[in-house]
Length: 167
Length: 135
Image 1: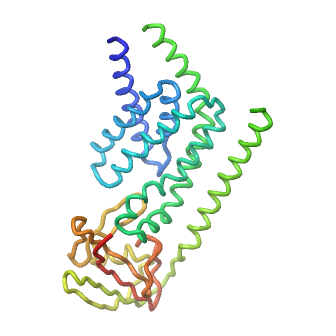
Image 2: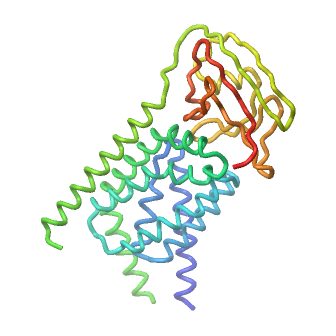
Image 3: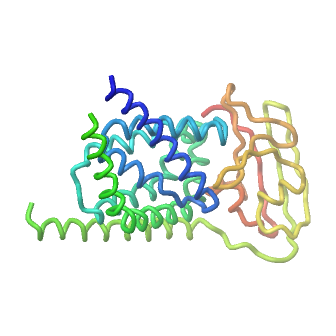
């Protein structure tokens, strides 16, 4: 029971942290640390990291409203977390920087996918016009993972040990 | 996996990433028409078979991009995302997701490959806003 309560609390806390980090950096176009935090949460806490994505996506809807983009959010972030879960044993942060950079670079293309149904021409134009943002997203994700990844990884590892001692 | 192999894979990953970024940037550059300063005379057609609309008007403008021109003329309604305007209505005629209708933009008769905010206004060009039904 205690474990369950701890788990639910962590999911809520992680979701709130993802949301707060996005809001804090929302003045910078496509620069975020949500990707990095999802990697860290999923690496250390497995599926809790994935569930926290749903909390985060729900919170974004309360701020920005619902739309086609939100459906994509609902799919893309948990899916990314599941990919991270599969790769969670990777400890080299240069590798994570590359993975996060690829995710950032493909973000616009992923968002263009639903628009293919509406209009393939618009989906293509949507993707092309967003390329500068995708590139800044890619660079931001690469740098954030490279600079912050390892220290935050170590810090979260220590926090996890405290949780485990209290079980 | 040996350390040499790991290093080679990481280097390959970085090289592929740089190649992907460069490739995407080239795609972007090749699809963006540089804006021209000065006064341009353009034609705007609005076609909607659904609403029985087929208009053609000439305009003289100093606007550089079609999105801002259409907005300032009060011709369009739109949603705005990070990537610019998405036209939802023209001259009050609205696209409707239930009937799967959407506004297509043609530049000199060919479908545009960029968003309305990246289409540079070019002297003598014909811009057609056509309601298309069906995805």
